[in-house]
Image 1 (spheres, rainbow, N blue to C red):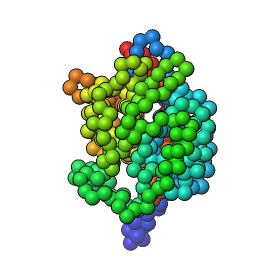
Image 2 (cartoon, rainbow, N blue to C red; image 1 turned 90 degrees about the vertical axis):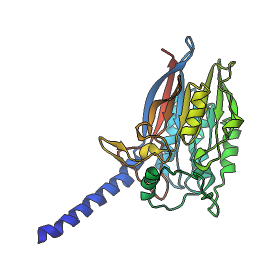
Image 3 (cartoon, one colour; image 1 turned 90 degrees about the horizontal axis):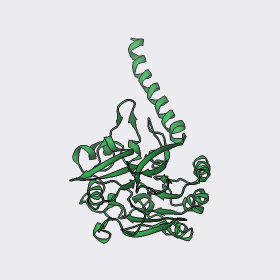
Image 4 (tube, rainbow, N blue to C red; image 1 turned 45 degrees about the vertical axis):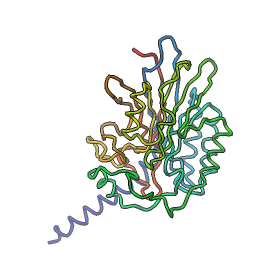
Length: 309
């Protein structure tokens, strides 16, 4: 009888230990991923691009802030921030402070839903149910942000703009490096249906040395549009790499309609005879109400862009 009583106690202990690991260690075990992407025209010099996403800053996260500041030591050619910087309305000054050293480099950004709206407590099982039902984000429902606390995102935007970073919310822009011009096309967050592809359609700009596509959430409608228009590289975030993954299996959810095989890292997307490289950042944070990661540590990515094969 005592052995039978010990079984649920053992399960509880293992669960508690797993939760402590996921919240206390892995969620704060920041990593740098390095990836090489062959997308440049022949003869063009290599470019080092730092891809940041899903910082989800909560006021007081000092270790995360120190780590973000340290990334400036990589000295990238430019920085791409694919959104969800906030998970706390009070954290805008800390985001700007943590990214301050990186804002000394050229950069560009788009916002995600958590930049605009404060997070809400949700049942984690809902993400699994959304995957089974095929419903993600708004998906035709009423705006879930109605009545929800709005973040002071304008101050963050103004800080990025003042540093010379290029905002790409349903618009185009350019980064001028020493000897190169990078054309950029970006969308506002598809997860809350703020994307307006018709406003930026038309494909890469012929007079630029390189054209990139940038978006927060990698929904298939967006990936299809960018790929059909001929962008060589798409950068996105949003998925957290699955956040809670199963070792030797991978992610269970992506929080959008992207398949789990492409939940993070470098992959590709094909439409007809056109193919784009795609990099989805696993992100370096988590929603303040689910501050855990398992088999999916927080990360930033240093992309080395090289000449096409």
